[in-house]
Image 1 (cartoon, one colour):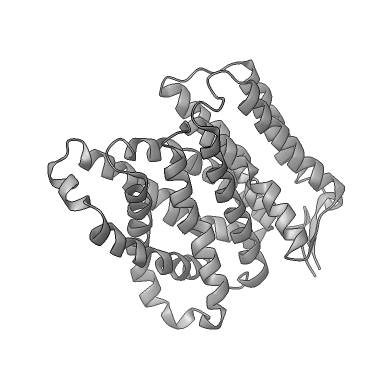
Image 2 (tube, rainbow, N blue to C red; image 1 turned 90 degrees about the vertical axis):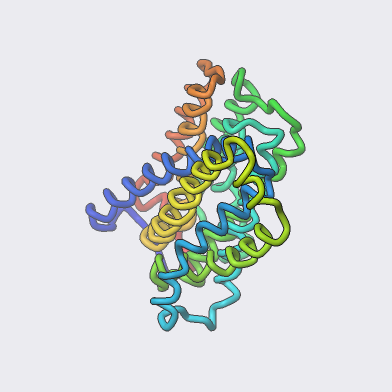
Length: 307
């Protein structure tokens, strides 16, 4: 029986919170970087660039750690690669052609709900009533931001928002897969194997199926847009993924997914800097989201137990 409770050493608790907040800042900035990349490149190119750069960054680590990868677990590794990065990269890039970066960050906070649902229905997890209340409290906060926050509502085609919902289902699947099947694998080794597997096909498609080289040579702003995507890939995919898997192994899939409750706050702040309006509803939503995170961490009564 694996449990994560407040009885963990205080140093681990502190590190867990530091990683959680840092991931919130990094991933909360991802949506504005995607938006900047889409100024020049199409959604498929942005997704492929993100995955390709991540794969090339991970490749040296994969080569050096090849013998340490448990290749008998290739199926969960592939699931993590596809669901933790591959599919969401395309979903978010396509969605943000019609949905603002603020809304993308808000909808991303659905991840804990799907992590919880998938964990119970598929992965055999058991959640307490307080855990459920914590998740739904955060979702209420996200709902307020979506439906009542002027300037942060669904500004584009609402159906494109469903692509982000699909991405959050993928994230929930990935987090549960790591916690269930890959908890004993080193975070860097896990990230290298999982993301290189989806990055290589992305590299092939980028150069063989798009006009990336031509745009880079002749289109104005192409290099700047590429730089935004490099930041997105290196910090938002490579570095953040390693620390996220570390957090999953230290805590639980559900607590780790709570990082998505911090992401809307950062995304909205970037939206304000980019000219979007913020209202009192935003602060109310943010307060509920942070309250949900706090509730999820209270004492043994709210622990998540994997039987």
